[in-house]
Image (cartoon, rainbow, N blue to C red; front, side, top):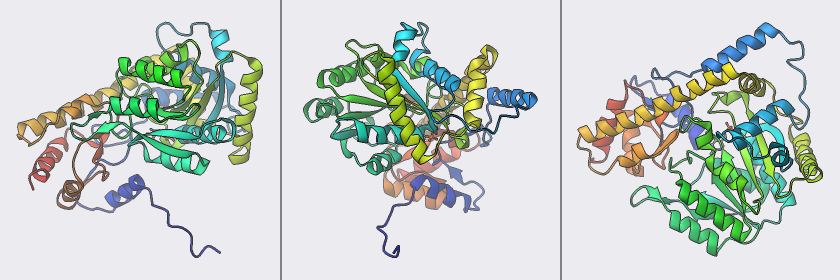
Length: 411
Ligand code: PMP
């Protein structure tokens, strides 16, 4: 029965990692994977995470391998909500009423949050389409295709000068999106372009969503990892949340990058209703729990217990904020180093976008033949879109990468 299945494209990022690992060339460079690496190119368990792990080992809780409830660990969800909706200096406007608007469940990391959210909306919202940025994280397409919601693209990136196509985005949402359509938005550190709207632009996006009755779906995969400040990276979500009349929206929250818990799959999904009502909120949690029960019964507990241990403790939260500075600081330094090396070599073209972009990724503007050349001659691995993961750069390889790019653009 399975001899003639429709072909499925393999995952470019995971294919690239495989090809990189199989390459014995000593100076090979992996700029494909979206994971943080130290200046020595090694994975980094965060200091705050290591301390939380030690505390847990010392506590030796016999219940540490028990099942979580279907909707997840309520204390973890409360802390996750505080982080995404109230991490700014002012916190909650009115915590009791505000929290009545938010239905939260624990998910299998950010991917699971996107997926559970997409399925819930496919079943229960009136949306005809989901509007996705062009380009976007490739998995958004898979997730919404599997949920069976028709995808539409809104312009996001202007290749001519590697900038944000704000006018194109607003025009598409204003003129083509229909009432109740879903608009998928990257809360910060847009993947793959590294280009985010300014605060003024976010306000205009909120205005069009409110005026046209569109449903914003925030994907928050880099809170704190991008700027080093969790409140700054959730600014747009908090702005949308505060609008009157209220905007119905949702947030898929990942703890993979900001806590370095990639394989532990810690995440949450929050659906925000327009009216503070325990009845409506509990109905949404029940609907989400129904999907969770049928798919994976409940989220895994180790990663979320680490996040909970850190966010419950003032000292560990301070340490985590320092860890965020370490990661975001190294990324910023490597952006500057790559830019400076390219300028030093008089590399043809403009490269300011490398320092202006934010987060894990940079859209370099390199072409497919140039990317092929870099891989064949220099063993430098990156996506065919020209996206590079800045965390693959180190003080030891950045000059080599710049020399290679300088050669590739003139080859
Ligand atoms: N959304 C975006 C935009 C991402 O870049 C990622 C990570 N690559 C995710 C969601 C989800 O990652 P995870 O499932 O590891 O939390």
